[in-house]
Length: 222
Image 1 (cartoon, rainbow, N blue to C red):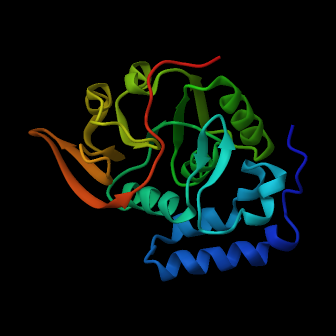
Image 2 (cartoon, one colour):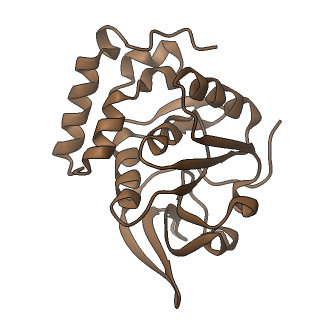
């Protein structure tokens, strides 16, 4: 049940949201559709009310169960990379979490398929999707390493936790011409964000920047 004021007041007001969008512009985000959706999306409803005054800081925040809501810049950057590199008809998200990244994707794509391994987080996210009247999100409780074969191929895949290497099922489920944006944990423990593109000859990848995500884990939690 969403009880937080959707419009926001004080530190969650529209003015505060707009200041965040300006900070994202200052950091180099240029995709207007992404910025518009982020400005309209009430990030404060995706976190505990005790932290709502920090909702529009450009920082990650805890959401429970050892997980975090991603820094707005990273949400914008990952979404922008996909939007600017091809179609956004069928998009797969690995790691629903609190549902914030999902909601941004829903605003820039035809349909979002999202997988979460932790059932309580998924339930909370689904409540938020209903509160926001998002009708183009399909959710599943499952293991993100396996992807969602029944709905493949996907124009775009976004992975919101860091594997040690990109799971092969996700590569297999990309459409020809499809793109994936994912963090990867390197042998030295650092993490890099990659844009992976697939064509008839195979896949190519481009390193984007250093990032910090929770690890991508297999299995499910009820």
